[in-house]
Image (cartoon, rainbow, N blue to C red; front, side, top):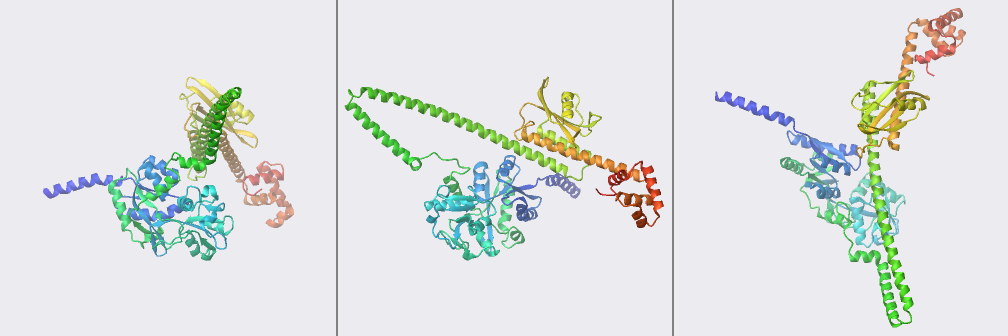
Length: 610
């Protein structure tokens, strides 16, 4: 009895635990896709497969993301781990409290590097030999916020007394960084800066020779085999989110640190394994120094004010001395210059009033600028929403697994959701009257019916008609967009939406972007209608030709090609009289009066191309 009781107890425990294991959500690893999603997936998918194999019961997935994508996913708690560049990690650490668990060991030949830096270089035949000689020269770099592609070089140059943003002419080339090296060799810039290892990879690939480049401010730290101009900083970190299971984070850390440097997964990810997390405090110092996110600009010190406005302070000091001298002179000549003193006081009052006016004008200008920035942000968000709407419509159009009506219904539903429409009705015209399509029936009783007068105006004019209506359910915006094919209205799109502002990411129904999206959908509907009509004509023509004999079909094809009776008779091996008899039968059976009508029928049936 005891063994049987134990058996059923184990079965019960397994029954309770197995569903829980099956329901475990995949572990999401966000990866910065600075070279595109496909390359990020191709490089880091072996790492996810390795962790899935090493940690039973958990499935790991790679999620390629942009900088903004990281923030959105973290806010929604859709990521468990992040793998990104050091500067981006510092921002996430300050903003969201992510914690590093391991640091990448980058593979370069037989070396495993946990630190990297930047290289400042020029052509070997250039007269530039020192960092100080770069003043007023053009510097090629990734962009103003790229850590290895600009900020490290900027810090090194500022130590040499040169700020590239003010004392040089930056040339932003973005990724990949090999384009920066090629731009310097081509003479588009006098100097350039890239991350360590880029030049060595290009030399190994045969894209550049070592003697073509000269390294400026070169350093040679012990044990670092790459050419270098700056200090060294930690490589990419793997970090966990605050909500990540601590036990899962411990297992991931253990498996990363146990990964052999020459294992298959390390070679597939072009790494040499992982090491314990390094100190990233230097990165905080750099971002704080240049006042880049997540660090806000610091208040200006007296030294900063004197450096930026020293000439103005000198002028003010001179003016103050002049006023003191004038006051002394006025005191000495008080009786003789009383009138002049009074005039001076009046002039001072006028000057103060003008300063106040300029201050008010400046405040008004700042407020207008703030409102303009907000308006532009709203426009960008609406543009993003419009792009997502178009992408969704395109994805539905190219789907081959949907029937015509299913595709139409999906597109109309997507369009209504994108515009926040209360109701969307698609109608085809029969004898000038709109008949709602089954893909978007009107919703009786839920909201007021769409207005037939506006729909008739859109049908007659062939142009989009908009109007506003007030009713029991509030103010509604109405839009009727005709579907025009070959100058004739064949269908109608009708939408009604509340006037209340919707989500910022939705395109406005009456904006230029919204109208363009609506017209693009109308053009696609016209194309679909034309294809449907052509298919119907082809089916009707094929039905008519189905009653012909094989010989009559051969004669019809020759006649449609424009061959005379003699040529037809020779090609088919029959007499001219027989050809004429077949032509007469074709005219009678197909109810056609001339060769042109026979040819048109053959083209419609697909026997002959136009």
